[in-house]
Image (cartoon, rainbow over all chains, first blue to last red):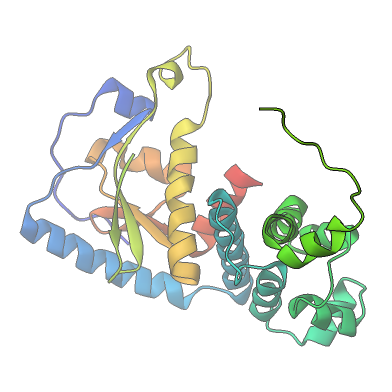
Length: 176
Length: 96
């Protein structure tokens, strides 16, 4: 799009010229409205030219940032499992599960079990997913999702505590 | 960094960006901090708007070329913006 607008006034500092600081130029409400309309038109055109490859790449990053956001928050969310994100990942590819399983050399049944949370993912799978995503989603992200679930289980499962208690014959007692 | 979310337009606007004193000028400790901040805005937009992810800013006229050259931003009238392949490329350049 050709720039045909009037010069936007405002003193540019040395820091701005060096790229260390950016302060948006100020527009009047009318100018802002016009600017938003121009931007919407430009975006409409560029969206029409978006390839499937770029769309797929953007969705991969979307999944990565969602995992990052979840892992940055220390709370466990039962929905945000390895299987959940794997399902999201496979669906963004727009291919059948069987085909995806073939692409990373695993059995379709194993893929289904992983998506449904019926199997603990083997370590090699995180590596294969990292390679498959062209490093967009690192292996340790997948690993941390599994770890988050396991941590929650270890912290909260009462049944396993009841079962394991019978194997502990002596308990330390604090001398207060 | 100051950003404004425009949910109706599915984009995030960068209003203000400033590196710390240690990372300004010739003797900066870390390079590309401003770029990392711009990519952070891109990541927020990607997280929220999926394939529609977009960031925009309104630079002063003298800085338009700088932002186009350095961050591959496109003209959108008075505003510069990043979306689609260019946004994908910048995230990739800084993150991977």
